[in-house]
Amino acid sequence: MATATATATATERMTEYERRRLENIKRNDEMMASLNIRSRLADLSASSKRLSGKAKSPKTSPKKKPKVETPVVVRRSLRARGMPPETEGSKGSDLESPFPNADSKIPISRKHSPRKLGPISMKDAYEDTTLYGSTFYKTFVETITGFSGVTQLNPCIVDTFEGKKEEVGDDKVLGYSNCNFDDQVCCKKEVKEEKVLGSLDPLSLDLKPENVVRITSGRIMAVKFFPSTEKNIIVTGDKLGQVGFWNVGSGDEEGRVSLFRPHSSPVSGISVQPFCLSKILTSSYDGLIRLMDVEKEVFELVYSSDDAVFSLCQQEKDSKSFYFSEGHGKLNIWDERAGKVSASWVLHEDRINSIDFNSQNRNFMVTSSTDGTACIWDLRKTTTGKQNSFKTIEHKRAVHSAYFSPSGGCVATTSFDNNIGLLTGTNYENLSMIYHNNHTGRWISSFRAIWGWDDFFLFIGNMKRGVDVISAARRNTAMTLWSPLISAIPCRFAIHPLRVGMLAGATSGGQVYMWVAGDEK
DNA sequence: CTAAGAGTTATCTTT
DNA sequence: AAAGATCCACTCTTAG
Image 1 (cartoon, rainbow, N blue to C red):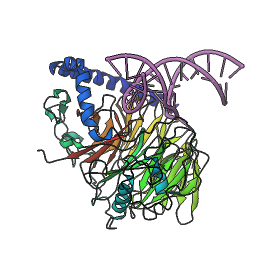
Image 2 (image 1 turned 90 degrees about the vertical axis):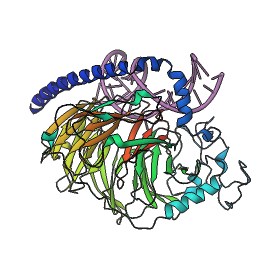
Image 3 (image 1 turned 60 degrees about the horizontal axis):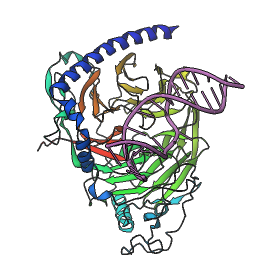
């Protein structure tokens, strides 16, 4: 079989990478020893207490009490109807507040929460986390509807590392990653790269205390930036079905986060409409796809299925259709004008975890699946079944993501088999496996390596609360970003599509960190 | 072939 | 400070 030889070479590579990995571990251990990490770990308790105090916003402790006594809860619909939203003095009063779940015990039901097969008003879905929701709700609506209407498109940094490999020389110490606190020596790490290629030096990414926020209360499954430079807004979806917004850098401590619960099960995908930023698509394990329309203040129901929807993707410049996966390997195309699914294929033998498109050639799509493969598809030829794929990448375990690089010239996959797969070459004929511990277990959303703003670096979380930066040219972990502000494992990431050097990482506790490049102060 | 169960992992809340 | 709850991820094992 052809797969036998492929497996053999993969095994050879594995040992090669394993060897290098062990060398790296040894080096790191020596370095950590020299930096006196071990003794610092001993008094972790003291520092972690201090750090968590810093990481969480100090004022957030008295807010939301989302605990539930009864797991099955129906959200009381239309309670807000007819209530004037001005009365702010009536904090916590169920009778007067238009957002009565501020102090009630119902808002976040756990499992088996029934889904509603129809539109949900935004006010009904609003999770009042602050007791002052009426004012913040209005602020939110004004913020999202207040875009100028001009949509900027991705400037598309088309710059590949192919052909520049020769420039990468032997290991040299390039620099050290920065940290915010002088007393935290442990976040410094040696970086080896002859020179920094590409449009951004990842070492310039800086995490500031004001850029750490808790958005949702559950495990974050999806995170996205709004494609606009007017305001920096991050939207997240979590395991409880919540969709949260963070208006970065504006408003006071509490007002910049708004939280809704349009779904009864985990939110699997988010897509902000490229030409209409007040419309946001969300998909969920509850089988629903909703369109949040902030102008109309409603979560419309677009699609419903008995199967879970596991991923959602929209081509960058196409607002007339979107692609989503459901059930065991099915992929659908939704036609906005027809208002129905216009094509449906069974592409994999198990759930499809990610969908992505080649930004330079829109006929090429890549999917990743729990069946252990990632496939590149030529949409002009796609019928059904993996045997018809343009290219299939085989992993030994479930594959959680597969993304085209910004130039479209590479594909990076992330698998539970502890590898990041890198596909290069004019016809994606070269496959490399880069070792990375992706064993996240049950409580952490699976890691997914995402591309930065060029073809040189990938970003992915690690189990030690750092952000590994993978060099595509060197095919290794070139550096790791650390910060004492990170109090949980960042597992899902997004880049700002229009601002080079703006990176968001989200955790299982609902927190989001935003790194920003540049201006060292 | 399918179902059920154990083990794995980290974070937040409660005691 | 330590224990308890989480509970649709995935893999492997065992029972039918």
